[in-house]
Length: 119
Image 1 (cartoon, one colour):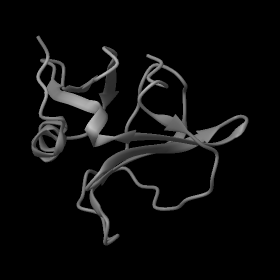
Image 2 (cartoon, one colour; image 1 turned 90 degrees about the vertical axis):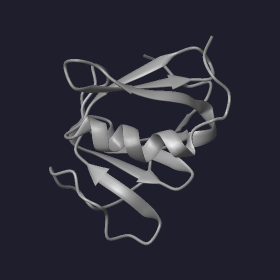
Image 3 (spheres, helix red, strand yellow; image 1 turned 45 degrees about the horizontal axis):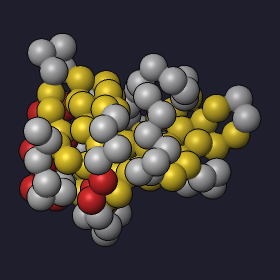
């Protein structure tokens, strides 16, 4: 699940933890909700959709975790029958996230993705 080629992970402090999928109060955030994925395991995880990127933040035993995914690096967003959001990246990798209301996330991400299509 390493999507490091198209995204960057940085350690920093941020706020806005919660558990529901709601439009975010921040001026630059379009959508915000809790999330999870296989690795790493995070405490208080938060996914935030901005106009130009998706930020995944949370806490690990080593400290704060933040993964930034530029929307230009996302080819397509799909929702699986089990309700997971799958982000197909230009690197050929797929990032699978469990988010509340994955369909709302897909509909918000799709118009902002790369114009290139997967074969």
